[in-house]
Each structure stands twice: as C-alpha cells, then as structure tokens.
Image 1 (cartoon, rainbow, N blue to C red):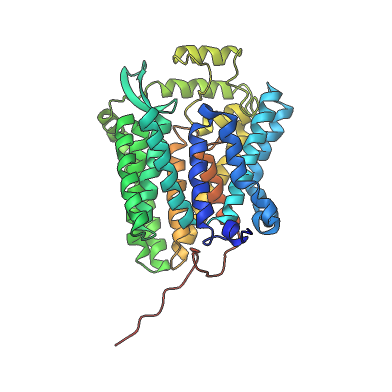
Image 2: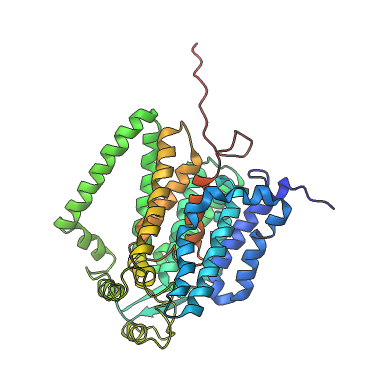
Length: 421
C-alpha cells in the first residue's frame, strides 16, 4: 500500500501523522532522562525520515535559516576551547540535531496541528506523571511538592503551563469544537491540577501572565493595524512603568509571599551570584557548552553539595543568561538574546500588521512564556527539551516563506468586505 506524500509532509493535510508525532515528541522530551536512548531515537525517527519523503520540501532553502543556527554553531565551535571537549562535542551535536528536527517540523506542521498535537502530548505526559509520580521534599524551603515522573517540580509546572496555554488557545484562538474542544477541557483540568500540586510559583505566574496576554491581544486585534501599533506602544510603556513601580513598592515580595517564597527565591539569588563570578573567569567565550556542571570539577561539586543535589547532575544556575555566560561567555549571551528578540519582534510585528494571523498569535504568546521563564530557568539551552523545540519552531516560522492561502493553513489573510443592506 502506497502512502501519499501529502499525508506525511503537507501542512494542514497530514494531521493523522503530525498530531501523534507532536504528541510523542513531547513525551520523549519529558522523559528522555528516564527512558534514555529509546526516547531519543524515537524522537529522531519521527522527524528525520521525512527528509527521504521529499527532501526539497522538508528541508527547504537553508539560506533562510542561517541566523537560526548561530547559537548552535557557537556551541559546536566551543569544542575548541572547552574545558571538557568530549562533553561539549556530544552536547552540541545533540543540540544541533534538535534544531534541525524543529526546522523539519516547521516545514510539515501548521500551527493548528502543533496546538492539538501539544494538547494530546501534554495530556499523555501529565497522565503518566499522575500514575507514576511522587512527592519530593525540598530541603531549601522545607516543603513537599508533587514532581510527577520528573526530577523537578519546575519541569512538571512547565508542561502544566504549556497545557493550559495550548488548551486555551485551541478554543479561544482557533475555535476548536467537538472532539478537540472536549480534549482541551480535560487536558486543561489536568494541567490546572498539576500546576497547583507542584507548587511552582514560576509556572503559576507565567501561565497567568501569558493567558492574560492572549485575552488582552484579542482587544488589540479588534482594531485596525495602525490603531494596534499605538495601543501596543502605549501598553508596553504602561507595563514597564507598572513593573518598575511594583519592584520599588514591594509588590514582588508580596506576590512571592503568596507562594511561600522570599526575596532570595529559595537560594536562587545566591546561585546567580556564584554564576556571575564563574562567568567572569572566562568572560568572552566561556568554559565550553555544558562544560561547567561536570563531575570532578571543584566548583560544580561544591554547589551540588550546598544545594543538596545528591545525583550530582541535572543542575544549573536557574537563569538562561547566566548559564549561557558561564558556558559560552558574552558571545553566547548576545547571540541567544538577539535570536530571542528577533522571534518576539517578528511575531509581534506580524500580529499587528496582518489583518489576522493566528500563527503569530500563538507563537508570540509562547515566545513571551519562554522569555519570562528565561530569567529563572534554562528551557531553551538544552537538547531534547520542549522549550528548545518551541523556540526554534517559532524562529523557523519567521524564516519560512509565507504560504499562499490553502485549506488547513493559518496565514496572512484579509477579511471579506462587509455587505451593506
């Protein structure tokens, strides 16, 4: 039996393959540490073989994507100055292949398929965590939190945040009904329960902010493009003023107090200080990609002991920019920050200037989520991570050519002229 190419690689026409592929990818990302090579090979098997179906359509013109590869290229080049070249080489190759798989997904997925695939994937991930998860004691704040089948409550919280956001977007942005509306309701409830159970202040706050952003943008999108620009500029200035005022008036401490946190963010401010001091040792290019948290290195061992990390692995500085500065120096921070800013600005610009652009509507919201979390997590720095996948998917959609209107595609479009009675 022959399978039509469109059933595998045509955006909007390949739902039978693409939705399970996205769902299984999320499961592989979530539990790659638990299942090891099996999960990683499954992830590769979902995307790389599509090149053989039609390499021209699946790969496209990579000249458009050169800016997207900048950070991955720098990570690979860090092998030449890394404190542990073998670790940097392996990790950078893994990261580079993660970028390639995300760009393949860009060519074969429309954003609606990504959304419903993520609903299914988050649902599977959370059900697995509820069935096989456990509570863990945090010696730093003296509380028990549900971590699911993850090693950290923050990772469970991240998936719960994504679940709530894509479930809300499926109904609010894409207008899903019947099957996927019901699925969004069920997964949304699961996500809300896991978000409360894990007690991750970061995940709760970022979820509230992003969902409020999605709702607020609906008001902006009701205006003409020129009116949107004025409102976005004015709203942006107001948000900055309120944020600065909140810091000086103690609003941050009050919000943290609701979650039982203090201004040290459960030791993160001390960890950030240690990271800044470590970055100053190699300020331009760092110690090499993933070459700091290595067993046997004195500073890494000291911090593992101070923060009760008995496994001596899976730890980081809880800040994307500090972690990048330590591993890849100022060069890495600038490269990553410029990529992130280009994603944010590119999708915001499309959202404002297009009459309707549901693709950028969702991807801008996800980019905002990743941006906020980047100050307390490293979601986009490691391979086999859903944050990294979504980061490069959003970047790839900016670089990909704009498609002509077609069934199943979400694109730039003009609304029909009103008919006067």
